[in-house]
Image (cartoon, rainbow, N blue to C red; front, side, top):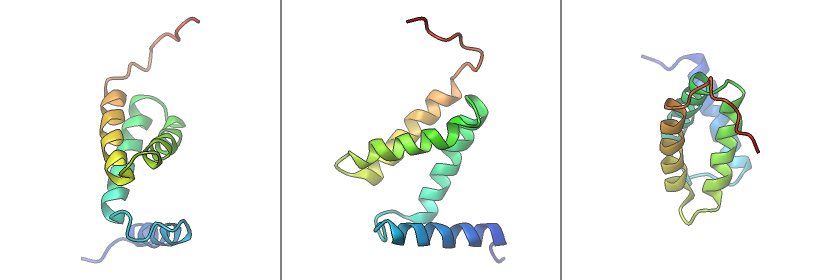
Length: 96
């Protein structure tokens, strides 16, 4: 079975972006794509749709500061997915 055109386009895009950012070989693109899609799905459905890309950016920023960014990204993604799964979208904003 051949990959869908969307999957092929995404794979090519991830490879191109990785090359532009000097990340070739730094991460397994298939695993990374699955991790990010799972994370953003959890946030989009459990918290808010606009929160999904912002969360992915924040995790990337935090992971980039770690000694092993790939491991940190995986760990942070798991941690934040659990947070999103338990998030109450009806939560009252905290008063300062």
